[in-house]
Structures are given as structure tokens and as C-alpha cells.
Image (cartoon, rainbow over all chains, first blue to last red):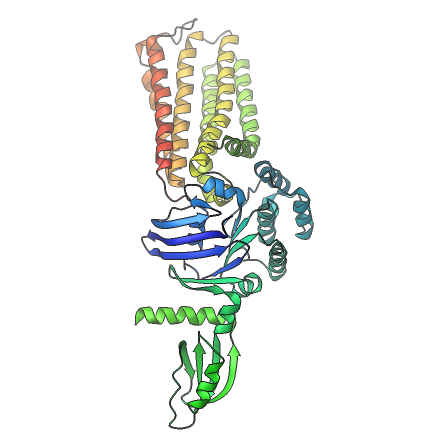
Length: 298
Length: 225
């Protein structure tokens, strides 16, 4: 069995005003990858290529052992896909959609679908056009989950949800993670959602993957060092400093390769370490993107 | 070709269009009944024909613009998340739309022919003209289907719907002047001329050509959503 659910190798896709450039991405089976980027960063383009909905100009994409887009029909037998711009058929009921998907997917799990109906507080006979946005997202999620896919691809599923609906959706996704063979590729602008459920994080900006790592490694290696420098003392040279803020006397260093030994190195250089602050994923993302953009301009 | 999933997609479209189909069928047969009940008045025939043509063109436009509507209503990502290739999706759209429209078209065509045959004052010689014009409606509808599937554009779909409606008038006006068609129209018996056969062959060839082009264009597309 292939231990990679998704593999992108040198994938490029050009549009008149946007280019997805040389994307290399690996998603191990059983992992949950949070795919984070600003609007227009290339998240949806990447996901559409993953689903075989658009063809890459160059590079190779393999999903569940199938080459995409050539073998997309076979790959999609084991994929559940929900995207923010996906709509169900307004005149039809939730029950009709469930029956429609059940007729296509032999692995459809009816008891699980019914339990999701209850958990999401959906009424089977309700027409889609009468549902709120949150209920529509939950319906789409139910249809994707109850087909018991090996790979769940979610393109900003929590966008536009109220806090209660968002929490319910995230709780269900967390429950799905109990199945170790289930792989999830989850894009979002909301770093809190990603931080909550992902074990792998990938940042994308302006069509390029700018960072990709295990979540714990990500959170461990980024730190803010708050220093106090005596007069006439130079800032210590540390590897991986991406941003220097604060004042000349009280500098704040943002570091992407933090090691505990750096604290001692600062003290040896004459600086006093006031604090070593962990960073949230959102802070890491913003600094990372800004740093890459600044370097690109320079 | 995954015929099972394609069939499910066709049944899905059938379900979504069923209400409209029944309404069009009821209205069409009600119109035919009204024509048959009217006393040999030209006004009843003209009004009835306008209603029937409007039903067919309207239903054709609605059903055949389904690919464009899938994009507009953002249901295309849902369909394309299913285990189908884009060519299979195209097949389901064209075949499904033609089946839904074809069922209505055939029912109304048979109804029109039956009305002509059982209504004493209708000249049976009209039947070849009626059949040719009915197939012309089918040609026009296939044009809408081909353009809607390949462009997924509201503008283009509306444009060809209008061109098709105008083309129908032009074709009707032209063929009624053909000796093999026009002369026999007011006669009491059906006279199927070689001109009528040729016109039907040309119409069916146009249908095959348009659908073939639609599939060819779709097979070359690289981006679908």
C-alpha cells in the first residue's frame, strides 16, 4: 500500500494573472494537512488540481495511487470533497441527496449518515434551498463523510459559518480523525481551525509553497525572543532571525529555527533574555508571508 | 465509460426537470385539445402553433442550458466530486438533456400528428411539413445543448436560443416555398416527397455534427471548475 495519499511533484499552472509555481507536496496516509494561505494564494487551484478538476501545465500529481487528472474517476471513488463554493441542488431534499450519493458509493454508511443528521440537526425532508449556509455546509459534509472516503478534501469548509456551526463541523472532523487510515487535506484562511485539527501544516503564498512541516515542529521552532541590550552592546547573531522589532534597547527577535541554546548564546553576547514567547500559527503565518514577500521585493 | 454513474447523473437531471416536463406536457396537450375543439379557424391553428413552438423552444432552452446552470448555481463542483471524468459528465449532460427534451418533443409531435389525423378539417398533407419543422426544433435545441455544454456561458446560451428561434421562422418560411413541400401541404393525403426526406437527412446530420463537435471540444478542455 502506498503510504502517501497525495504527492505533488513540480506542479505548475499558469493563468494570465496568477501562476502556481513548482508545487511539491507530500501528504502521508492517515495525516491531516492544514493548507493555509491568504485569499488568492493558490489554495483552491492546488485543490482543484488535486481533484483533477483542472489540469496542471507541468509536473505530476498522484492521489491515492492514481495519476491525476487522467485517472480522476477512479481516484474520486475514495475521495470526499467539500468546498466553500460547492452548492447542492436547491429544489431537492437532504434525503434525496443522501439517496443519490448512496446509489453511487457502495461503501455509503447509512447508520453513520443518520447519526450525522442528528448531530448536525438536519431534517431529511427539508429542501436545500430552505437551509441556512451552515446547514448547507453540514449537508455537504454529511454527504462527503458518510461515503467513508479514504481521503477527505476540504476547501475552506468553515468559511462563513457562525461560531456554533463551525465548532460542530470541527468537532465532527476531529471525530473522523479517530480512523487512522483516513487522510484529510484541509484548506483554510482560519489558522485557529487549522491549528485545532491538523498535524501537518503547509503555507502557500502567491502561488508558492513557502513552508511545510509537522505542526509540533512548526510551533516549536518559531519563537519571539524579548531581549534587553545594555548600551553599546550589539544584537547577537542568531540563525533564523526573520524579523527584528522593538527598540534598540529592547529588541524583539522573531526566530524560525529556535533552539534552547540560543538563550545562552544571547546571554553570552551580553544581552539579557526577558522572555521566550511561543507564537500562534496565525502569527507564524503572517510573519512568514511578510518575510517572504519582503525578500522577494529586495 | 462509467455507464452506471452516467446513468445516475441522467436520472438526477430527469428528477430535477420532472416538474417542468409534466407542466410542459400538460400545457402542450391542452393546447392540442383546444386546437382540435376549435372550428376550423385559422386563428386557433396559428395561436396553438405559437404556443406549442414556445413550449418546445422554452423547454429546450431550460433543459439544454442545464450545463451552464450547473456552473451558475455552483453545483458543478458537487457533480465533479463524484467518480466521473469530465467527458462522462458531458455525456450525461447531452444524453440526459436530449432524453428529457426528446420525450416531450416526441410526445408533442405524436400528439400534433394525431390531432391532424383525427380532426376532420385538418389537411393531412401538412404532416411532412410539421415533421420537418419539429425536427428543426430538435436541431435548434441540440445547438443550444452544444453551445451550453461547451461554453457554459449564459450570454452564448441566450444568443443561440434567439438565433435558433429566428432560424426556425426562416426555415419554415423557406421550406414552405419548396415545390416538394408547399404544394402538398393543403392536400387531403400525406405526400412524402424526396425533398422532405432530404431535408430530414440534413437536419439529422446537423444534429450528429453538433453533438460530435460538442464532445470533441469537451475532450480537449483542460480546466472544468
